[in-house]
Image 1 (tube, rainbow, N blue to C red):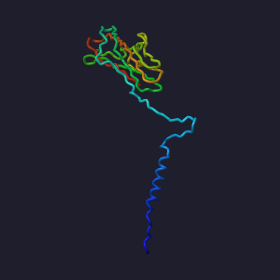
Image 2 (cartoon, helix red, strand yellow; image 1 turned 180 degrees about the vertical axis):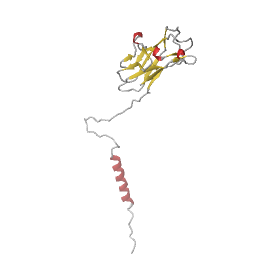
Image 3 (tube, rainbow, N blue to C red; image 1 turned 120 degrees about the horizontal axis):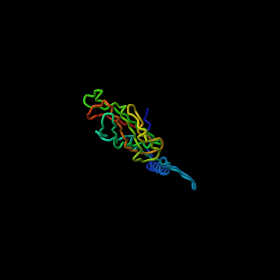
Image 4 (cartoon, one colour; image 1 turned 90 degrees about the horizontal axis):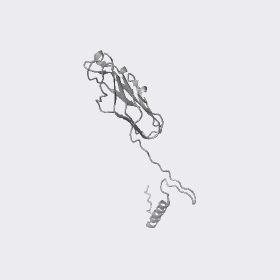
Length: 196
């Protein structure tokens, strides 16, 4: 059986094919392009992203912080220093609550006579000393009359409405009702803040 041979196209025919291909390519619309008739609106969808600049954090004073001195059966009162909340979540509902609690305070070997229990340690936030952003900022304890013991977790400050980035700062007061049986010494404990 013989081989079948196919003649190559002439140069003229090949040239016509190339011209046709170029002509078709040049008239196609760019990918994704909109085509609108005259006198009509021709829209292009545009997007951009607002990013979350950070999270929700709280800042407290470096210790140790002294709130003063006093005698057995007396009272010690002093400010803790600035407590700050920074809400960088850029949230639609930018609400938060800062809470506070404390340990017992001890001196020496921490025997009962060398311990001031956290039931005797009170806290009041007072009003905000500074805020930024929108919404309502609410002190946990507006004044000394509203002071609460730190034997359980208390609300120190909160933000109950608003959106977007915001900050708040307050300078709370710690009050210690010194027990009658307390011995002389430097008492140490911690006041703990948390944010959520």
